[in-house]
Amino acid sequence: MQIWYAFCDLLPFEMFHWDFMKNALLALLLMAPLFGLMSTMIVTGRMSFFSDALGHSAFTGIAIGCICGLAPTPVAVAFSVAFALLFSYVRSRSNQAADTLIGVFSSTAVALGIFIATLGGGSFTKYNKYLIGDVLSVTPSEIGVLLLVLAGVILFWFLRINQLTLASIHPQLASSRGINVDSMQTSFTVAIAVVVTLAINWVGLLMLNSLLVLPAAAARNVSRNLKQYHLLSILFALAASIIGLIVSYYLGASTGAAISLILALIFSISFALRKKVA
Image 1 (cartoon, one colour):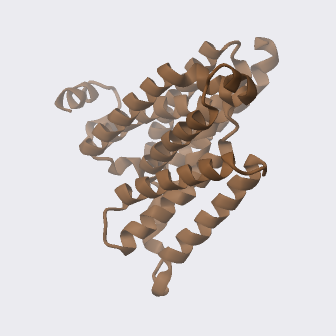
Image 2: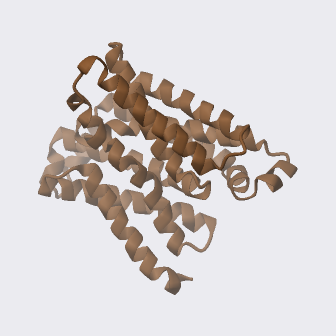
């Protein structure tokens, strides 16, 4: 971390002379590729609303952890993974449409989270930080966890992206080629659960889904092949994260909201350029 701090001291922005801003910048530089890669998988797999549902389940896990006097994040990760596995199990054995099942699980998670958080007349105010998030509170140890998660997602992406893409676009063809579609989708949903749960503390539940959808949605407007699609998604996420952090600092606004708005702007520009690129 000392090398990173020394590098930040050389930057022309006074804001990066503070240790908490240095931590926030490094965390965003790790989260942006994470969001960029996961975004392509989520958009291709038509799982945009599922990531939102997982955010709700993560909040429920946080509420359970707080009520039981345990560390909220590990409980939230465990609950979200269990939620993702249960969803995958029900989805593989139901003839209901995926969006219907996502609606069922999402509404249940929201109701359960609010019920537990307000159990016994408890105040919901202490959970507001999880709704908005605060990347400025990230610690060096949490950055280390982010680095490990990013490495795991990159490894998963290199090993499974072709199979996952085929399973998402044409499950029957994927099965005919020996790909276990159910296992692939289950591992993917678990990966989303871990990423969503870890990021909720810094990005916030209300902004999380936009960061997992907009990078790939914008990249899809202007990319001509899969390589461009993944690369542009990561670059858009990186650009929005850095610009959003700077804008939020000088305007005194939420960093997660600023990043989401920058991504929305990038999506608007890419949408306007889509015909020219095509």
